[in-house]
Length: 498
Image (tube, rainbow, N blue to C red; front, side, top):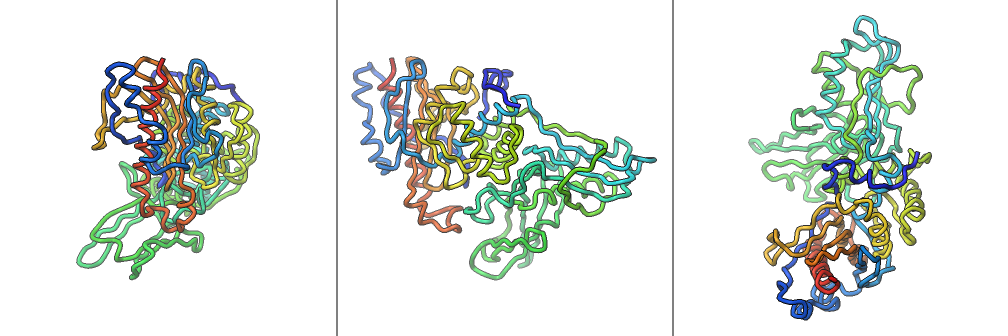
């Protein structure tokens, strides 16, 4: 089922007015405030040229941008507008539109507990199944509530086995194979997600020895898991190693890198087993003993749904996805949208191909080639021209109302609360890639759509897989790129206002 894009997707309620998005997390631009206006001529004379802005950022030849008047659609200024560059998390804006069109803003994902064989005197005579419904926001607290609801439904025991179904979406060990093993923003993907498919690794040093835990941690619970295990090794490097060993996530860490104590979230490569183990522990706390979870590839006929848990509506899920730039959410909702449109994707690339075709047909994009739904993959490409075409097309449906306000900053990176230029946009950041696309309003009220894509692909090509978590020079490059973004926004607001 496909829905045409309409205002109802964006403005279903007043609460929808703030929905916005590896290392992959996006961040707002940082730069100094342009001179305060003291008359149009003086202000425009103080505006930096594009050449000066790019030269200061040391990004000449590595930037594409387009800015257009929202009211007329006229393109005001551009640089390499048709050069395709990595979009980073700006790709999530396309995914959001795709998911809203295919599923509808009010769609809710449902996770179920299903019994087979009937229930006699509180005992399930067959199996109990944990059935994933493509909810990217499922967490341990929610599973605990489902376990409590199972007890409330009168279930005391299960005669058969405990089984887990995650095959409603393709089951993939990671989003992007080029990323380091240990980064939490690159987990496994399936139709059953828990805690964004991350496990909490914590270590504490006591009397020269370390105690370590691997938990499906939440605000209220800390269930230990077996599907992910950690061992400490006496070595200097690498800091982490990963191996798929006997159907489990086997990790090692260098002792010298641990220090006194600390923690981090590691990616889970086996989402179904992870969720199953956590639920087994939570059910036991309710007095319901379950066997070890076993994965199944299909659902039995005639099962009875005992407990249902529905997610928040899709609009809210996407708002949070764009705010926090959660890659897993983008991939799961993108795959769910392709499936809802009648597709059977076996990979992220196959699903993204369907989304590319949809974007060409519905958004007017001509040269867009995404390889996933999050923008994490190296081979994704978008042109600034295409992105502005989208922004102009969907503007009347209220897209700006659900984008995140961009913080304008001074030289000391302090947010300027009363900056005369207002901007709402989607950010995106990868190593030596920085993107920003959205809308700005000049002090006189003139509204413009813009897209800025900056990438130094020559440096990216030299990075080893291990360097991608924090390459030398990456932070300073990103800061220069974001300063450039603010300078361009301020230039356009001063130069192209009515």
